[in-house]
Length: 542
Image (cartoon, rainbow, N blue to C red; front, top):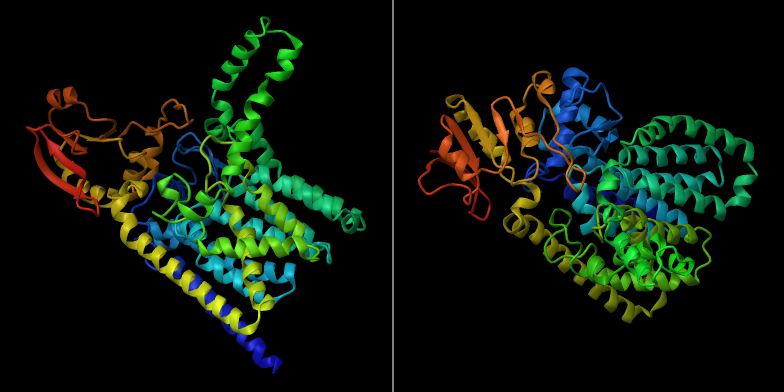
């Protein structure tokens, strides 16, 4: 009998992982429809390293990639390299590592939930919910470093719990956490906070093996040296400085204004009442709480269209019910590792909360795993707390609603998302570059609109431009208010807004712009349309 039950559990987990693979791998090159500039930067720089040993700017095997001046953590670029070498420079090669990490995270969710709650059912339900999670699917199907980092954070938590019994796993846990910090910016803040919390919670167990622990920490510190050097060079903070709410000087002006109303800017009472802490703390708290709002979690998700699907929250609405039950029983539970699970949820949004754009599903992505596990726990409790007839009725209703919301999500993702928000993923560049290769030899200069984010990197990516020829031409502009720069020209290509005066005074030039940039007397040569039929790029000359 036990053997049959074991087989059923194994079969259920296998089917869940198959579903996770299908949802993350099917038509990966086509959906999401388009290919964003960050993905193209990862792919082209991986291609450049393979061809020349240098990134697009000629830097030899960098730890952080300069890219658009944001110095992206480089480990995901190196994960992508073997896929580019094998599959070529294309969308699948860039997205496949993230998709595979997404599948493995589902497996880890099962193992972690099972270990925390000592119950296969909680593990299986948690894995199922993560498999179909809109939040996790959104970032598993794109070339997102954050998704890979979430896998290693989850692995780090799982190994940490195993390490409480076998100390060698603490070392591998620390290594896993360190890898997440080499992958993405957010873990560089939340991982140290999580580890500090873990040490405080489990100090009695850890200090029994203090000698081993010190050795492990020393080794990990040595492995951290490149990361520390990156921070001290200023590269590590470039992106944060551009996105942090500290870059908003408005509160500082408000401080001076409020102190001035005391009649003396140096008044001690004024300084105590009006300072950077009192000015920025409410911003941080408001941004932090944004990540726990029902609007974000269950109704509409976040504001950035690239990070969400229309009319869908980060979780399904029915999962709010699972979460409420899960939290209720979690508070009452006596499982020894649940406090770590709660701290994981509470710590995950901290890095995102220090930016001006919140709630942000990408920067707080590591929340998805512990919250899903709590939901899995809540759903499992329904099996135990109700009488059979009412339980069966409630469970049937819950799963029917879950299936309905899941189907609605898939319809939104594959049907409505590409047509409603084609610019979210910079749709049309592949076809545009393909057409460009047909016409470009007929012109001395090609001017391409910069309305669509970072057009130069997508031209490099889809054109498979020779990195050795491009590197000497790469000159990044000064950074804008968000700490981004761009490339304005290389070879015969220029990237900027197409102005009427330029069109009038330029000969032997091919223009590729939007319908709003094309003059009435222009000769249309070709066109690329969005999925909704509206023009994306118009090829024209005067």
